[in-house]
Image (cartoon, rainbow, N blue to C red; front, side):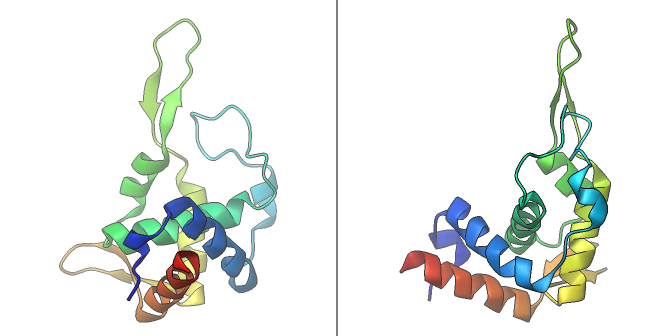
Length: 138
């Protein structure tokens, strides 16, 4: 059986984003928002919301249970402070939180409190990603 750990991750996220476009919808405000304080402009790709959501789903599958704070650290970056040295800043939480809520509504992830608080992938989400991984491998 092929797992998501066995395939090219960028190809997996691209294919998963195409499948997620059928299951979830992008909020209206997503066309105008930056993904964090470390970014100077909003994303230029039209389907960036689905790519980020697919990447979040993969990250929850790999590292779950995981919370919004850890995901903000993962997607953060260096903030340009002009002449001063750059410093690491976390990504915006609204984009991550809303994407995770959309994945919950689609039934692909769920919240847990024990043994650790965070979100994990459901059986349906596991099947969804394993099917895409199988398509990427062949």
